Length: 235
Ligand SMILES: *Cc1c(COP(=O)(O)O)cnc(C)c1O
Image 1: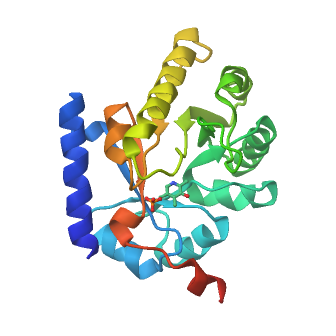
Image 2: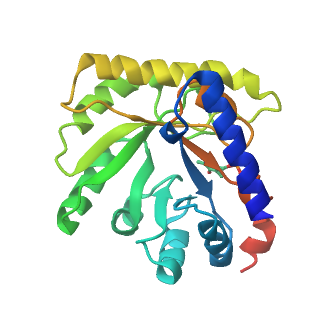
């Protein structure tokens, strides 16, 4: 199943890139493996997937123990609490869900201890949904300016979780706003190095996100199938 799903997703990515006049290599597929057992990550890995998205540090710890972090690259995409930062920095190639200056400073501190420069993204609540984490778009420039000063983190770009909708076209405007936000900040030249990552688009809307400039799409259900949270919670 995973192989067929991956073929389908890869083909969709290829077509979206074509429509947008972009190179296929400009898009990185993150297989969102939250709640899935290590065996399913191994299967995806056998078909060429190296980037995995997880939303809980504890799951990264467990899967990293089984699979290692050399061939498997873990991306932290869920809300991150300060007491989990140390493990997150140890085990993730990128933290997509930075939503405050305090958290960025905490990551900077742990990265310094580990002698690492941690790649991070700022999570933006682009549709201003009350239920969502992330900073307001209008706060991003100021925050980015402060985060660029931290020596042990590298702010690579922006991330968003667009609203859940049965009509993915409705999210196009949000993806476009995200892209404009990134371009605006890069234009202000706050750091020597421009931000180059836009993490946006999930199973329901990743082709549209790619058309609007996503460099990293996070696909879970479309690769691994439905998640069964209830069964998981009983453990
Ligand atoms: C679960 C999750 C995804 C993947 O969602 P699907 O709809 O299953 O593709 C992407 N991003 C984040 C932040 C998630 O928590």
